[in-house]
Image 1 (cartoon, rainbow, N blue to C red):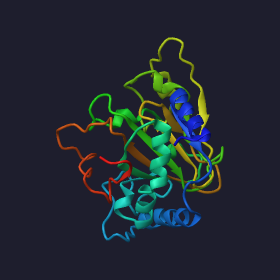
Image 2: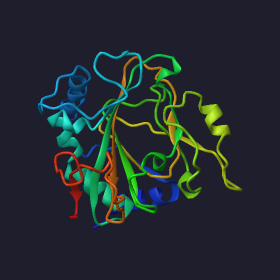
Image 3: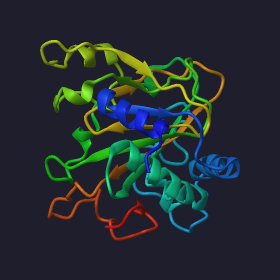
Image 4: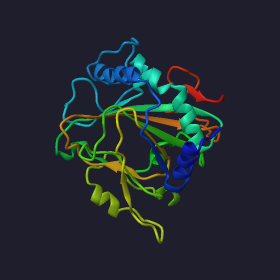
Length: 263
């Protein structure tokens, strides 16, 4: 049953295209183990016995670059436990208003400190990168903070209400000039560009719609900004018939667990 707090989250998600939960649904022990798991993966230490999927950043690469590693739950047991957590499934199901939640992809994101624009994440909509799904599929993302995310740590920023603007067919996750990317969007008449920074304690969660514009600037704090992006689908999402790298693990509960309801 939806409580008043979750109903408020659901209302925010529908209105703004995102909602934030600052009170962690995970134990402190699991958060510590998952955070340590990030460092293990970055060092090439895989306690599952297998590596993550092919990634833009690999052990031994420049440590000052944004570290983005695909399917970290393949390589680390604590991260697999976090990604599979039923409390996360219940939270997102109530927020989105769906009967089933399945993880279909995840990414480790480690943003080292430093003013260099090498760690900028460009304005984008996730739908630009989800061509494995049929048009209209209900896709959303939970973003879990594995460090305290402060205003100076290069927090993710959502553009409030942008999920109502449709698919803009522009933007670039790997773009490094957000001012130029913003200028390239053709916004609908009456649209107001209002950025909302995602400030969360370790263990906090944000959930956003596939069409919600988001990006971030460099991390100017003293430590790394650590997070997991967990991409999910509801019962209203259908993978395309052709085999895709992004959906090939849907029958593997270790990599793509159903964390609420049933398929």
